[in-house]
Amino acid sequence: MSLRATAATARRVALQLRHDHRTLALLLVVPCVLVTIIRFVFDDGGTFDRIGGPLLGVFPLLSMFLVTSIAMLRERTSGTLERLLTMPVGKIDILVGYAAAFAAVAVVQAALVATVSMGLLGLDVQGPTWAVLLLGIANALLGMALGLFVSAFARTEFQAVQFLPAFLLPQLLLCGLLTPRDAMAPALEAVSRALPMTYAYDALDRVTRDAGGAAAPTSVVLACTALALACGALTLRRRTS
Image (cartoon, rainbow, N blue to C red; front, side, top):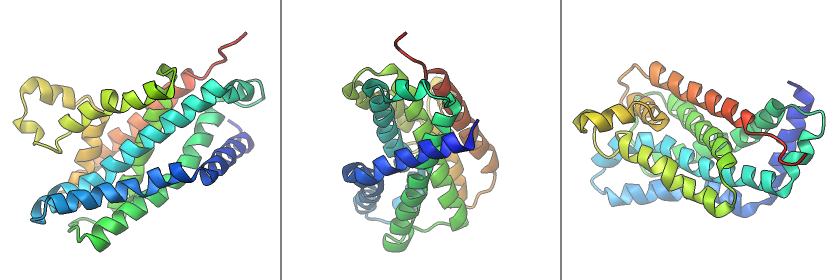
């Protein structure tokens, strides 16, 4: 791995993002708007305090998945990726460069969503705020890694968008946000234990309730992120001889 090549890739992606105002709006504004809507949908306050904490990680995960899957697909279909692979740049340099650029956006995104939720909307978090912020960033990175990986299976941007309901919506339904996992049918509970969003939800739920034991699900989230990046590196290859 070359730090110089990684930094060059991260700088190029960051410059592209900076000039793409619509994508930045999607990444930074939309999660805040969705959290605000949820707050006023559950006007009793208690429900928002229960689900608002986990949503600080779920919404960044969804938005980063969508944006990174499309961004990487553009790199693949436009020929940019093939040109990069003809240069002395390793696959891991490209993936880590992408991860670094989107990680910077994830930090800003998580900070904005947490500020809006806990500062303006009155979300009551029992655990430490810094832990909630770090888990929000970790979930955004998980969404980014999954997006980079699944982009290899799409041929068009329309197909990439369809991965959101196909790949993440079942995880959202089974993670425990809508109903406790121990109240689900045994088969559904078993499936939920194999899905990364379950552990992302569990870690944030424990931290926001100050219930302890968040280290184990957080470790699973980080391991899934590393595994998705490794699998994404395997899909980086030249498509022409």
